[in-house]
Image 1 (cartoon, rainbow, N blue to C red):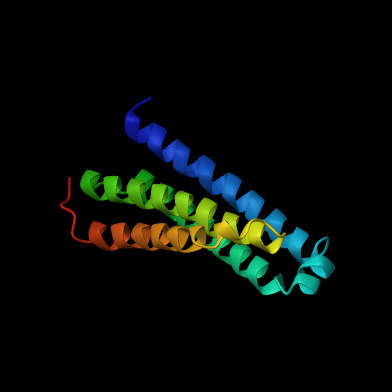
Image 2: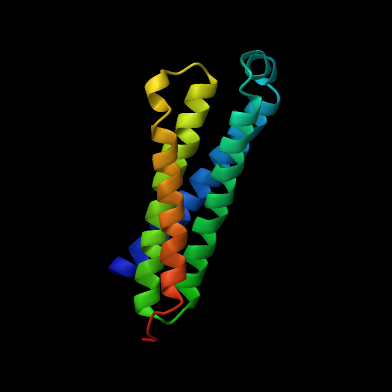
Length: 135
C-alpha cells in the first residue's frame, strides 16, 4: 500500500469515526443530557459542537473521495493537510465545547478557538489546492 493510499484510508477512517461520534454525541445531547445541558445553560454550546463535528466529518469524507478520484498529486497533499487540520479542529473545538458543557475545567475555554483556527486552516488548504498544478 502506498503512502497516498494510507493517507486516503486514514481520512476515510477519521470521517467514519467522527461521523459516528458526531451523530451519537448529538443524540446524547438532545436526549440523554438535555435536562442537564439546559440547566447549565450549555445546550447551545453542545449543539454547536455537534454541528461543527458533523460538518467536518463530512468534509473529511469529501476530501478522501476527491483524493481518490482526482489526478492532481499536489492538490491531494493539500487535501491531506486539510483533513489533518479538520480532525485536529474537531478534537479541540468540539471536544472542548463538549467538556465545558459537562462542567469541565475553565482552562479549556482558550482551547476552543485553537480548534476553530485548525478548522479554518483546513479550509485554507482547500482554497490553496485550487491553485495546485495538475500531475
